[in-house]
Image 1 (cartoon, rainbow, N blue to C red):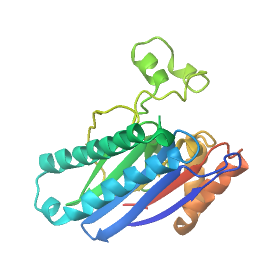
Image 2 (cartoon, rainbow, N blue to C red):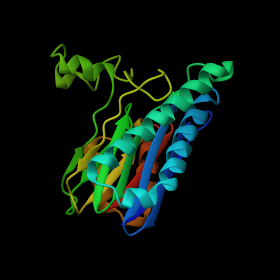
Image 3 (cartoon, rainbow, N blue to C red):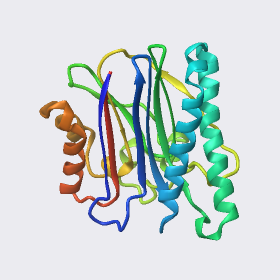
Image 4 (cartoon, one colour):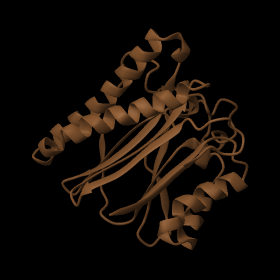
Length: 245
């Protein structure tokens, strides 16, 4: 397992509210997170940083226990990590006016006992690219208003990309006191994973992403994805973490 990662302010924002973590602890344990802060000023940056630091610290304190745990207990633990992070951000924004309304998306993948566990809140995404680099699949589901409309058959799939409220989130860490988190297992053992904020996916199509991964050396993939997103407009902060599994 190896990774390449980069975050960038983009071309239109005054500061970068994205944060990421990419860490391989040993051959059995790794943790990758992308968080995209919401709230403006410094609030979004604070929320994304609090989420990542809270999850990382609790994860690292329990690595040895997790190595001995079964699948169900690992899932419960990872779900609890997101719940704890949500509570921390929520309490912070309620206790300090300058943080009022802040929150963050999050997408997380961890390797434990040769399995890949993942969860997401908001519209930061995880993609899977097969070993031959000829297919790309979005694994996570965006927590957005348009997806809710789609589920209820109120709009067509072809309308999602151009819907005026496509960026309206239905879920984010820190906005409400309680949050549901669901951990799933990615049933693959070879290929590539991309974790990214919407600053990447709003600028690049799935085919753009796949072509970039196909055409470039692994060690510069995150740089190339970010650069390409900036060339296409760089309308938001951009974060890309690519993992070879």
